Image 1 (cartoon, helix red, strand yellow):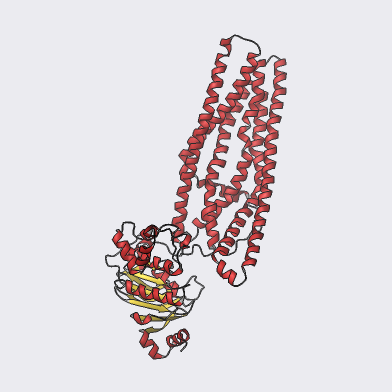
Image 2 (cartoon, rainbow, N blue to C red):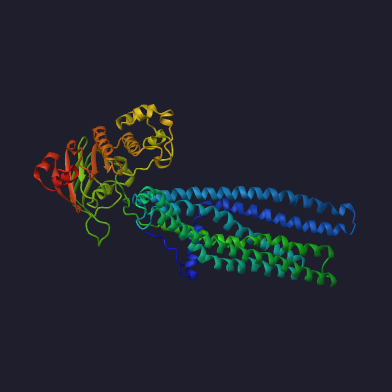
Length: 591
């Protein structure tokens, strides 16, 4: 699905409020730390205001040449506020960032767990590149919400109210002027910058996702794009999206500049207004001349509170859009849900029976699988063959509880599969996929992801059964060899054999191999299939493939066409019939 970068429709006030509540809910796990960070931040800003106010009082009072004892309290106050400001600021940033990263860690786990419950490819309406943008870029906007949005607004509210109260107690007119200008800085200016930023930030989040998807597609498909001469077109498309993103960034910078200009203008107006009101009060005998300096400089210090609010509002607009995209992932409906009261995994998990299985991806869609019967027991090897789109991978995903089945039955150890949780099911039934992920880690780390507690002898045995042990032993670093991003330092055959070794180390009672030789040359693919069937002799094995070489070594071959089993039998039996399987064999062998 391509991510549109068109301007979104304006949101209504209830929609904005609902979106804000949903956005702030992401910070709920860090609520206690946020309260502490707000108190510490208020202490830091309050100390800054106190430092400037007492300094102004001290200088004014000193100009009157009083005795040293008259200045002692002011000197101590300046020292206290100067030291406490730095300490409070350090503690506030420490606690605020701790809160942000704790909330981020929790959110990452929640998003990852949610993605794990969806289909293997994530939500069907999202491209893999867009999922990367949501899982990485959008999720990582959460610290900005905590540090750059919630804390500034909370601190501004607390200290702003206290500062206005103090200013009002010294001179009511000055307090009123400070209240009015702070209210403008805290409401009108953020509202204006937020209104200017809202639509741009929505476009930025969508455009960033589109760019990430384009780059991921370009990198992953680079060999094919180069081979077919389509690389330049995709590069131009990525450059066009990048230019659009740069224009949005420039517009955002202009909006931020408007906010900063207004935030700089208002404290100057407040100081001038308080000075005028203070001079009139001094002349009228209602204000001590020493206090005049205090009520004049306090607005300058107080506007430190409001100076960051326009930027915070702009950040909130961006974060709201980003976390809204994360919420779409969290709210995506999984194809399969666990039962409310799941049954425990049976003790015998090496027997799978499928009867009358029917699957489809929507009530109005045609059947992807239609009446499939299948028996898998320990030591039995069954191959399912057919053209692309025949339903082979859907059968694998149904066995692994990645897709639901509408009719029929799948039992594991005598228990219906939809009565088990997906995790329990996948502890018994393992998958060797054609695109099994290899992590950017060592060979041993990639293997131990399947069985962290495995002894080194078990690891070596899995490598031996996958025909990798001799190669690993010849490497200078052995099992500590780094494989690179997505196994980039391995050949295609080595990468797939590593996936086979990982599945063998996990020791699944039932093993599903979905096109294990795909994207490899013919000789390598045939060798991997043969070695997998030999290595998994103690397991129940379902081999899904479109190649027929080596199928004389399986117990049964099932031929799928349009989701139906049109032929089944051994390799020799099917060749003798002269049907669909024979035609497939003829096309593959050229006979």
